[in-house]
Length: 287
Length: 232
Image (cartoon, rainbow over the protein chains, first blue to last red):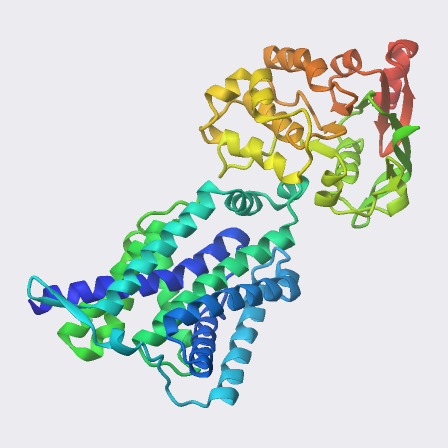
């Protein structure tokens, strides 16, 4: 029963990883930008939620309504103000600039909030659980997974059913020709970053409710996000969800064997999958 | 008044100068052919006109506005659409999505999805297919339809028949009068001189980045045209 429990907890944790990964995957898919600061942006969102929920006395889930638009706006401004200037066709400038951004965010958070671990207080949700077939399932992890599925489904809908998604895909295919069709790529990239950071905000708040965080933990989240994207296959959103779940289950089972193996087991499974299927389990992108 | 005026247009790729002082004008509703051999500067001219290459603002004037310095998306909103060389459809988009992306320009007009499907019924049959699964001719139809969906006042077609089977070329040329109507002007870039001259009221021949000859199809002899074309 312990094993079954570990697997279920792992699946639910995978939802969080999928949300972290989805924003990353979106940006890479649309503009071939690897956002090294992605993990730190998640932590930034968690701190924003912490501040907002303390100042306003609101539950973290309600703070979502505030933090999501704030992060989206920040994403748009960041993209138009800084990141668009790095997209010259060379892979290096965006890597360097987002790495710099990561350092800046970490240090700014350290200045503002100190290095003490923080946690978002989710009240009764923290301990609420239900029992199914002898296995206790936390309501918060379950909610987190449900939201992750909804976020992935929402992104899938935007990408394949809306004019905005069409614009994302067109710009991703061929920037020049998209520009001929009236699409200002700088604006489209701004919208993509806004959407990515909106997802980041959701991920950050759930992360903050689930575990404690401090300014330095963003990098580790970034790695999990990368791994989930690569396992699932670049450019495939449902694949990313599966990737997140595989990573979550691997970590959870590793932790069951030996608490020290939790993170290691995730990395090992990632490497194994990479060795067997270098393009991930469900690759969609052809280039 | 001419719809489009090009005045002393130069264009460069780094140190290489591709166009030298091109002067050209197109009246509203006029169809003009640009002919010339490979490397004569035809595609560069199309890139400049569509905004893919930026120039000095006053070198290109469209409906009284200097547009030479505008980005391609800004140019498209002013009513110039390009059917690019080699079709260049969006591979991630279906046939219908490729057509719909043309509406992104935000210009209302007579061209709708229904009218494109009426013009090219085969595209309606294949509307949900990946654009890459189409034949070259069908892809050219999508590329033309995509440009028309932006309801342009000036349609630029770069290398209309390049790489297409003769029977396809014939059918696309037969559809041209329906495509270029309602006062729309068009610039057709072609290597096939006979085909290009058959649908246009005037032509410009480019050679090594300069206009080597221009006029009406009937008033220039074959010898004159081939001298301007090949430079011999």
